[in-house]
Image 1 (tube, one colour):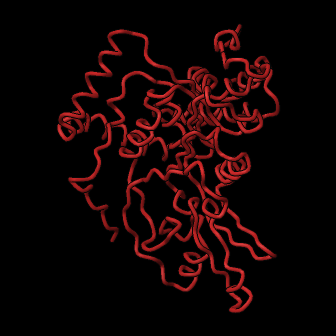
Image 2 (cartoon, one colour; image 1 turned 90 degrees about the vertical axis):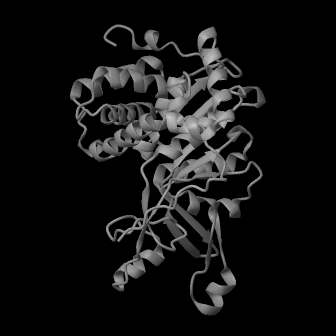
Length: 349
């Protein structure tokens, strides 16, 4: 029988509730779509400091449906012989010793800016492989991130090579470490969230393009909404438990919708007219390659599933275009990222 996750310690840090965030709807939607369909390859959140980027990520993790995982597995493998598994879990199932399932909360695994490649990927002990004839692997950050959220703050300050590694893993769902002819692979299917302040430097266009979705967040201009942001934050700091309880019902409803969307996603259909419109939008936007088209369709499917529908409609596609296209538009170096969705949609959009 699966064990339930232990309750959060009373003296642990309180997490600001995701449903209590004021405004920033595109950011919230992009995050939700990525946890519904991790194959979207992550979301890049660009914006100035103090715009609730990290608050949103941590708040979302609190309301995600609990994971069922194999007890003792450092790669968070599911207790399912048909799933993508690490070599140890695969061997245990083949030997008829399936692991005990336990429930666990989704974690936000943070990657420090100064992380080394070995710390991210994990490392192989070549001496053990040569002398004992077996692979000895020390799991890295990507092992902990499997089936969790991998959060990279200031991703634009990370070494380009490491960003490439993260994006490859996010796209393929696997991490492979090779040294001197010895290799080890394990599942690495995570929701990648990168945040950055453009004032501190940009990502190369080749890396920008590989983030599935991108949102630009700014401070709220509306006086009433700004006042509400301050009011809620003060209430949370003064009485965190009461504040969290006040938003618990909305959080449970979001948990239910995300879980239902994940189950519905494989059944969501995309009509030929929607596919043709996605292609038309990408061509009009002047994007390179086919990644924009595919990402738009995937994001539209995830949005339809989140809305409880088994068929993508034009509103799903418009919402997806606003998240999948801005960082893929051709622009001059150092030009501000400006995206006019209505202009790109144009006639027939």
